[in-house]
Length: 122
Image (cartoon, rainbow, N blue to C red):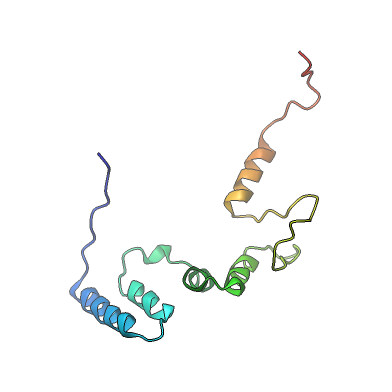
């Protein structure tokens, strides 16, 4: 049996606002992702997990400039700026961003003792 999250109960105000926002988003020509975001924003539940503006823009539009802006915020001051595009010919170590899953794995691997110098010929 699968555990399922309990359904949330919307307030009357949230329900009315969501219905109005839904109608607006459905009738918009051309499609406007900001109207769908406005629909999501009518509900308070989960608002603390809302993505940053650039992340939301990338999610809805796949605009690489929005993704670049979001990633730039992760780069610590004093670190080199991340350039757009992917250089598949690059050799050497790749930059690992702090606060990312890849960065967490890198930190865990770096903290793991190695058997450097141990005899592995057996």
